[in-house]
Image (tube, rainbow over all chains, first blue to last red; front, top):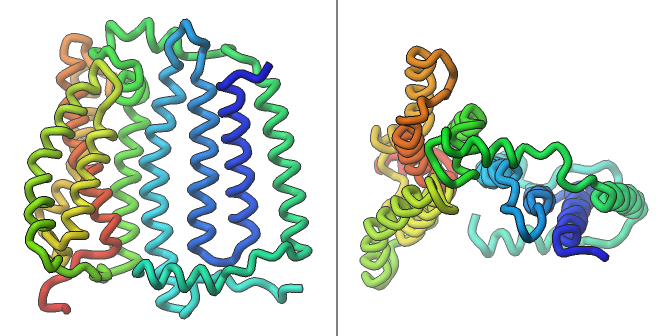
Length: 103
Length: 238
């Protein structure tokens, strides 16, 4: 019943959820940046599979164009985030976000 | 940060136990994934699509590849702002990390450096081909820019070009070329046709390829400079 495009959409949703969990659960900035990238990849997968219009029609170009824009912006945001993280580590000696008392 | 440092940093953070707050977060994200999956499964297929409009307007867009038409013609302002975002990322990185962290050494063997040097002209040709192909087939400025960015990263990693040349004008020129070409085209076309980035169909392909060419070099250099991370510093500051 589930076709390949739906399977890709669901995989994208799952990637987004996994990334969101890691983003919220772990205090290390490098993990958070990696998690953000996993989330972004999930969103891109959803967009790519939404563009699928069946075997007879060509894929919808509008979501594809949005994805290629998104990939480049994601790479640049990652670069900026990594620079911020190294700066935070240089200033505070730690690349972890301080959390409340962990129970 | 070297790979060793990254390994150590992550090992110190290896505590991935499911504590109570994490269980709470896990429950919330699981619920969100379930809700999104339900939405994805019940998503109405092929409703409100822009694809027919995008493909029917292709003859007037100047290109045959619908993705390029969307990026550079229909939603040109979108791509203009995106290229500006790339430039902003560089400005941000240079502002936050004034000094580039140089950890690259000239390799012991001349083979690598020579190989990497030879790659640059070859990859410029490849990138140019991808750009040209992008008008009619899958390809375009972003794909070509990614190829150039790859060569730039190799150049830095093999210490062919190290970021100690101060603030060379050519570097800033290349970084800003994409935005500059886009803005000049936008303002020029606004005066000529009265519409922002509204190309006359006969000249559309030329305008698109010129903008894409400038954007491609900007994207490539941006990626390589982001890889360096930080302001290219002067030799005497070492």
